[in-house]
Amino acid sequence: MSNGSIIANAYDRGRDMLRRMFPFAYGPSAKHDFAKDYGWPDNLGFEQLYRLYTRSGLAAAAVDKTIGKTWQTMPALWESEKPAESAGEKAIAKQFAKKNIWRALMDADRRSMVGEYAGAIILLRDGKRLDQPVDRVPRGIESIAGIIPAWQGQLTVTEWDTVEGSETYGEPVYFQFDEQAVGNPQNTSNSQVRIHRDRMLIWSDDGTLNCRSALEPGFDDASDAMKIKGAGGEGFWKSARGAPIIESKEGVSLEDIRKGMGASTNDEVLEKLNDKVDAFNSGFHSALMIGGFQTKPLTITLPQPKEFWEPCVQSFAASMGIPFKVLVGNITGERASTEDKTEWAETCMSRRENRVLPILNEFIDRLVAWGVLDKKDWTIGWTSLLEATPDDKLDRAAKMSQINQQAGTEPVFLPDEIRDEAGFKSADEVEGFDEFLRERAERQRAMAEDGPVNDLPDDEVVE
Picture 1 (cartoon, rainbow, N blue to C red):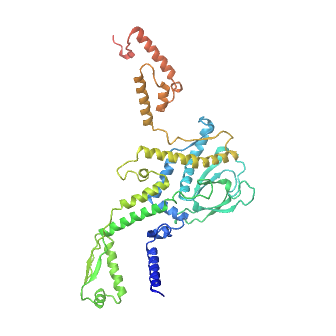
Picture 2: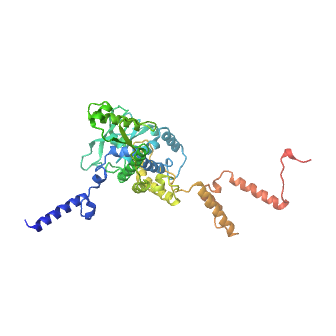
Picture 3: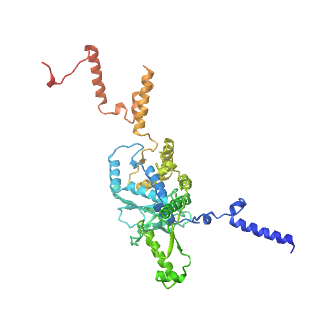
């Protein structure tokens, strides 16, 4: 082999070694395994997502704030596009409040953000088991006995619709519901119930099981934020109560150490030293006494974690569609801006319209099909998240009044327009308003004819 070949082979081996050591330095063609490099899981399952929700403050805040804003007020069921305040609407509102129907559906929505999907089990007083399909339910709105929200980890599909040409081809027919609470080892119940699809509302982005968790895109970001926070906390603790560095004095042999420690082997020496150090590290008021040894504190210098933590949180907030200051609150000394709040309200309003309401409408359609509700133009009424606050409404009404005053004899806004902007009914809809207008007109006419009149009560008549 020539010297040139030897040099070329050595160069290639060196380049390959460098490529393995520093893959980022060899351009986009190099293969990367970010999950392995940065300690992220290759695949995510429900248990990992659930653990993130229960152990990460960021993940819990993202889910709970999204649900809290989406369900800022509870919806209502109307017989038409506007509330009729009829006996039927009142009966529905009473039964839904009594059985916590809206709240249970809200909890199913919350669970669907953690997993790829969640379930809402519909309990009916129809005299049938949960594994039987629903036909007609004769008792009206009181037939709804309740809703059970279920985690993805509690549901397993046991049978699929495999009949070609079926309207529900490829969809689940039966579910198995594990009643044991997710993440609660104290609950030893292992009861499993078979449930027919009629009695199960699937809660997900598209109403199927083929969705993903809302936490999945930002899982790595939230994990990194937890690592930085945990490393910082552990580092500050060890810096404040550092593990000592133990050195033996010059000229001290292993035999002397064993005798001094009352040990027979080197392993026993280490075990006894570790016991003393553990006792020392167990509290700030412990003392460390080791004869024949010198101890030095272990000093740890930590960088400020904010510069590393904030990018992780910002990336996680972006994955959830939440403005950073809305997610973390007022920890930076700055409150969320009006633009952030408006954007957040628009995001949750879009989520309500495109994700939540279709599932609620499916629920109502089932109740109509089963005879629980009469066939009407049922509408789910829900206060808009974009509606101005009472203070904002009054401010706008005040500005409209000022514009009228500046306009002179030709008002720009009608009184009813100002009242509507302030959030109040128009004048002709207020009970007793017409009578008030007549009385005011009579007083004005009397003042015009006779001048101002001071009306005194009967018991204050001056003689």
